[in-house]
Length: 488
Ligand SMILES: Nc1nc2c(ncn2[C@@H]2O[C@H](COP(=O)(O)OP(=O)(O)O)[C@@H](O)[C@H]2O)c(=O)[nH]1
Ligand SMILES: [Mg+2]
Image 1: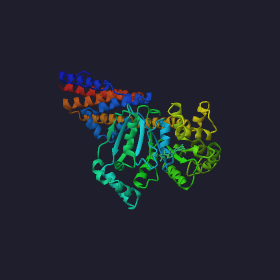
Image 2: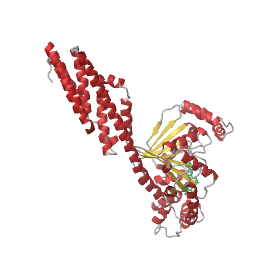
Image 3: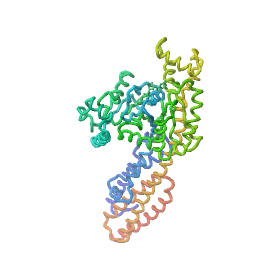
Image 4: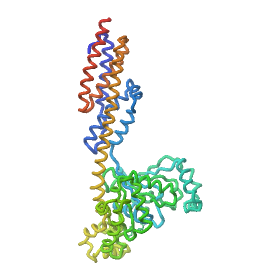
């Protein structure tokens, strides 16, 4: 491009170089590394975002009919490491916490007699063991309290008063999240979790969420295991938290004691399926505490027929095969005992050893545990749960995420296209007037070039459009420059 005015030429060169620099600046793409295609698309859009954010163009972006910035941010967020939320739901004492401990092969979730966990407790990978606690805002607390006060004699209010929690309230409500990450031992970490989740401590009333970050996390990257307060929480506000969570979770482990599929459990299951809003396939019905049956294997074989009969109904799975595939019998407590045994953590003649032999006998194994170790592990069903999580949930979810990302990418591209079109029309309008001063032309020219540059940074399906746009622009701008030359 030739400019008669040297200063304009220089400014133009500088601007183009500046845009190029923006495009070339390295982008931290580690968040997108989970999928190569996604990573490539995300980096392109990040580059475009930088160019669009540059001060000259930002007005045009803001004024564009669609909210391009929002689209772009939504796209990038979706591209970042996906999270797989797995919610554990069930009635109190169904064995949720014991199951979590078995899945994580750790002893962190407390399995007390009193109901624990009024807040969501999330277990996920972290660079170091950590506990992050977040608290209700004042508005959320008001809602919770109104919900609890509906039944003034409720256990909630009684306990709240008994623990004199009111006197602590102002210390916690509205407080920013706290993170602890220096633990000297496993026990310290466990104590810290208990401190915020135990129903015996007054502070637990004000805790909204506890995130337990684990360095040695036994599930695939991005998976988050969530202990929920359950659907039968005395406070509706809290059971609603579980309800919402079932809806957004990628998988739900519905825990039901293997010996009892009666009224209350049926109701809970029904409610879980309802709250998946048409996605029954994401529910895994976990029959827990298999070892408490008199003859676990024989009795379960009978039970599962009954369970399937109920769970294949339209209100649940709506499909006998799906029902069969998604019911998993487990004995989480026995799994943990076996893991302790494997690690030589069981003392001879101890109660724990008693428990282990008792459980082994239930599964048809007498004193020769070593010989039947794998078979016993298999019978606890925990491996089956792992296999389901890995083989069912991850690929299925990956497919959904990729589809979603593709859609959002198209949306961003069409927004960018629209923006470029608008620029072009505006410019044509200006040219038509042909009474431009040099500054105006320069500015328009820069905008045009910038768009070209960032659209160029984009992928193949825009190439035709770019070529047309470039030819058209070159022609128009040459006209204008010639006019100026002639005028000068
Ligand atoms: N025998 C046996 N007991 C279990 C098993 N799972 C849980 N329990 C016991 O059932 C009780 C409630 O378990 P917990 O995990 O705290 O239930 P939650 O309220 O659903 O979290 C505890 O006393 C556990 O030890 C199991 O697989 N076998
Ligand atoms: Mg629990």
